[in-house]
Length: 120
Image (cartoon, rainbow, N blue to C red; front, side, top):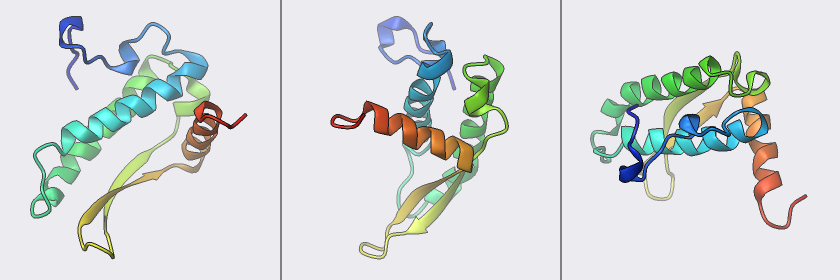
């Protein structure tokens, strides 16, 4: 993970001044998506397995970054995310699946419900 300059227009959520507390999970999910996208940007159906270890290392580093900056200890401390591949039955193409620890998954689901229109 490299930091981007403001002129590049691509910031990491953990760099944002409001990354602490309830906002942290929103920034983390944004960073997680960006991390996965970057890790697999050169992958295709034939070589995607070659990128799994690098992607997992990047995800582990991202989670550790949120722990180190104490973004929201109740959300991130002791949690994990594991990548795995699954085959799509319809198209027989590999899908990237996230296996999230139950506590972190619960927090993500609750956060998503709060930010989706029409949910309270």
